Image 1 (tube, rainbow, N blue to C red):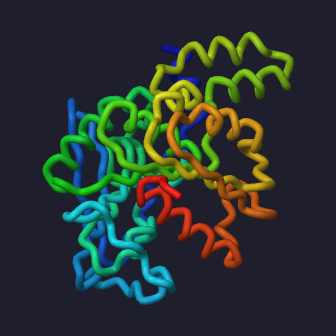
Image 2: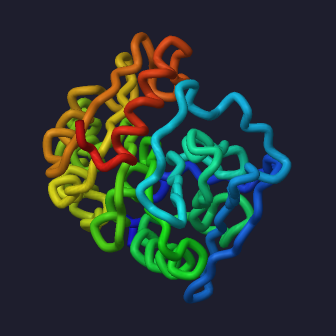
Length: 277
């Protein structure tokens, strides 16, 4: 019990402060066993996204046609302090003439959800998300996008449910990081004890070894929170087609530099297109 509480406190940074959702977003509660998460969703049709100006988002040279007749569902998993009320419409708007969804996940403890945030919700949350997608994204391709801790949530989802492509930004190997941080404080045994309390849904290196869909790793060159060598341990275990984009002179939370935005869009096309050259 104490170990679980410590892990939740050390890893999660939940917030429930009111955030005005972006224009065009729909909120969908997601409930199970007296717990509640929430999804925020953009819906795109051939006419665009209602209330959202996406004129500058599409690929300048025109994106290739999606390989799913019913379009693409983009599922976004934010980082440990992230929220979905301001998640943006990219990369779906690279294909402005295609139908699709952008779905962001606020776990319990974030936004207008159940009050307590815990790592133990991972599997039940993914099951509830899969049920929702089965009703609202029938026949659509699935692109999972994770940011930092959200990468581990995305990997856990892809290990159990259908997924066609993934984009991971600065993914952390949690068990190893706990041990490294504890060892630096001359308390290696504490790190090992904490790491043993994590379920398999939080072991990014092991989860990555079962991923066979095309995956793009977006890596901040100067990441001071999740060092690139730690991210590379996850990247090396990915079993499918993979590419890496290193964001020059960027730290963990820095935006993609303007001079690399074109390269990013091209790699998004590659990963969604099936990972073929």
